[in-house]
Image (tube, rainbow, N blue to C red; front, top):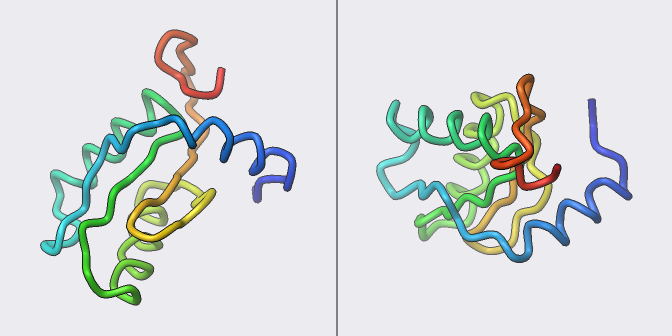
Length: 99
């Protein structure tokens, strides 16, 4: 289900102070990167992802592919950083960035 404008706005505010927890390099989406992104989304629900890729189109493609494979939504994409959200089934107040 797509996020509402108000929800996106509040997630952007929260995401502003977050540090990237996953980095996707020129090597693309390896199994290890996918697993780490999945783990981070399960724990934190809202994560910042750094895309260390020079080509703008390749960045957009890999970002969309990573979000699709993780079942996440891209909240914001600015330059080489993306903010992704996926609701967790077992949300933990101590680790979640939005609770």
